[in-house]
Amino acid sequence: AELRRGTGFLAHGYGDMDELTSFREQYCRPLLRACSEELRATWLERLAYTLRPAAERGHFIDIAELEAVEVALFVGSCCSPRVAGSDSNQAAQDVGRLASSLQHAYSACVVSLSINPPPVLIALPQQIASCCEAMQNLKMAAAIL
Image 1 (tube, rainbow, N blue to C red):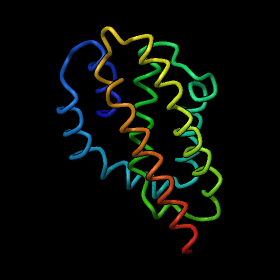
Image 2 (image 1 turned 30 degrees about the vertical axis):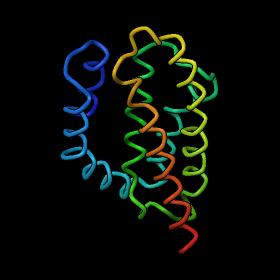
Image 3 (image 1 turned 90 degrees about the horizontal axis):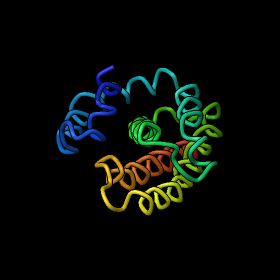
């Protein structure tokens, strides 16, 4: 709930990215990592479901969707390597593919919002990279199993 409550405040100028990053790292990452271990493939399937529309469309409908995707990418970056296994391999590949394809949506958004980009847009490339890295780590962990 606290992670979701943070969604929306950056786009409207309430707070800054440093505050959100600090809060996420201190309180959200450990909890989300534990949740990913419990939910495994279901966790990854829900992430793919959230990322798919913007990734396949190649652009964001509005700031709210941009923020939802940014949150989902953060959640993906929190995924524990313990999620790796035969039941989660395909879902991890889907999340990784969708996350990397969001780079195009990000580029389109930068062009359209170049005059006054919201802070969440500035954070998006790092979240894309972090989520892709977490999915790559899952792939490597699965190969070891």
